[in-house]
Structure formats: C-alpha cells, structure tokens
Image (cartoon, rainbow, N blue to C red):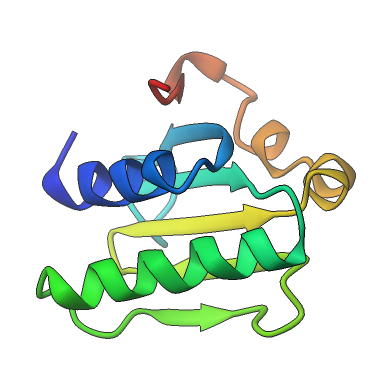
Length: 114
C-alpha cells in the first residue's frame, strides 16, 4: 500500500471513521488505483472527516483534491487522483452499497486495520 493510502487511512482512523474499507482497483478501473469507503456517525462527522482528509492531503503536498457532496454531507466524494475516498452517513452507505458493486470478485477488498 502506498503512502497516499496510508496517509488517508491514518487520518480517517484518527478521526474515528467507522467501517473503513480499502478496495484495490488496479487493473479493474481506469478512474483510480484505490477506493476507500468509510462512514461517519452524522452529517457533522462526515463533514469533519472530509475537511480533515482534504487538509491532510494539502499539507502533505498532494495538492488540492476535488471534492463533491459538501456541505450536505450525506455522501462526500474526494478525488485525490490515484485514490478516491467515499464518506457516508451509515444509512446512505447501506442504501447505495457501493462496496458490493466492486466485490464481484471480492479478493481485492481488504478491511482496513482499526
């Protein structure tokens, strides 16, 4: 796992994101190498997670990532180039269930360490 993934996973873990999942997209999608999916407890928690990830990326020299879903914070998408991060409120995450879309051959899904 590269340093960009480590940076994001550490930030999410430090901020108490829930159910963090890393999906390896290498060879499966041209959009990114890795997808990280996590949940926040509320709109406010999802917004704080997104803000902290964006700030961490910028401070680490990864430039300004594209973001969608702020300020509503039901589902926030952060495009950091090789890594795409999806942050959800739990009920929104279970409704869209994007992990299942990518789990047809589920060996590429790894639960992140807590």
